[in-house]
Image (cartoon, rainbow, N blue to C red; front, side, top):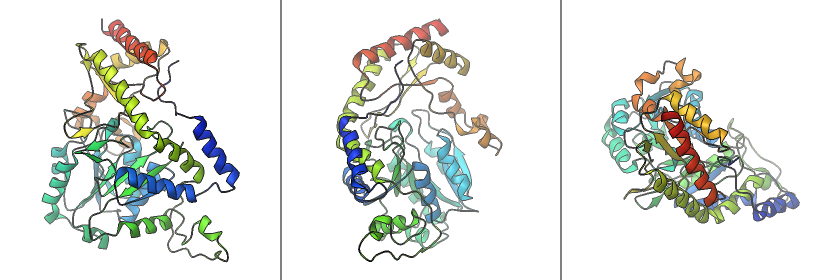
Length: 401
């Protein structure tokens, strides 16, 4: 079986984790702090705090920003459930909009129509690692700033809708020469096991607020907020005579551990090598399918945007959902693993019962019903890539004739 997206675990990774185990310090400590600094240096943002998942990172962010009942948060219908779940848990109204015709990203015209004085944040999602149109998005919210109604001093200081980027897929991607992480007010990464860069589970918040915000001070506030509101972390409490601490607020518990950070430090050192191989695989797929009448290949490089090459989202032109599923079954029977990214939120019970209907998001349905994500990872060999290509072609031919 050719797997879909296994992690790259090397002897260097094992040695780094073993070193942490031998050190006697396995929770948040020096390796986590170093990982935060290295992410900041790589992405070009102003400060970074590591957490135990994308989900909790975004949840804490929404809480800190004061998002709650009476507020609205906009995001695309075409995304993983985590993007919507955090908004529902915040108590705010979730506003879903459709995606654009050219790619899988949020439709900015739909965003513009959805904005009103209750809108406090937009969560654009870089599906598959391909960046959203951040320049146009910031132009839009600045144009709408006169209608913005802040609820607290943070919102008043910003003076407009906040952009909290869902970059779960796009670590290493670029928009107009700038790396993802340095574009939005806050970018939230995922380091889940299937991501380009993994810490097994984990995530990071990259802060990039404009002046007069102090992003270093925000970092300090989040270090408290993600550890139950405790004024000192465990490592700081080990210093001589430093046992006493305060709990400044009822916070959350979602700090990253040094065990996770040890994996991330190795992954980050090898990341450009990883991206280069993923890019090669993307181009092999493109070359193989570009002349097939039935294939709709994803956009992953333009003059302004460079993907992180996370997902190769191949679409089967004019295929129905049933036909797509039959194609996937044929591929699986040939020992090749593929996937679908994603089921749009209105297809899921948790969202349909809250009044979201797939018919209201026609472009999301049009892309979902015939999408197949192909394997892309560093250790996927050229021979395996050729096997995937041949298997997909044969499966499509068998199902569609």
